[in-house]
Image 1 (tube, rainbow, N blue to C red):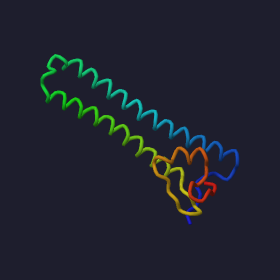
Image 2: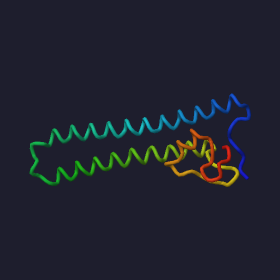
Image 3: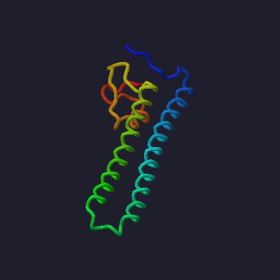
Image 4: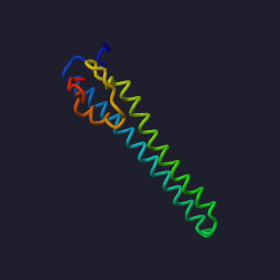
Length: 120
C-alpha cells in the first residue's frame, strides 16, 4: 500500500489541494501561452510569405510548423500534469488507481477516486 502524500491537519489539507490546483492551472496557462505565441509567430511568417502564395512548399512548411507548435503545447501540458499528479500523490491508496491526464484536474478538485470513491 502506498502512503498518502497529503498533510494530516485539515487546514493544511485544504492549502495542499489549493496549491495542487494552482500548479495544474499554471501548467495549463503556460501551455496556452506557448500555443498562442507559436501561432502568432506563424501568422507573422504567413504575412511574410503571402507574396509567394503559389509555392506549395512554403505553405506545407508553415502548416507543419503550426501542427508542431500545437502538438508541443499539448505535450507540455500533459507531461507537466502527470509530473504534478505524481509529485502530489494523486493516486488512490485504496485501489491503486492512477488517473489519466484528462482526469487529473477533476480528481484534484473532487479529492476522490473515480473508481472506488475513496478520499485521496
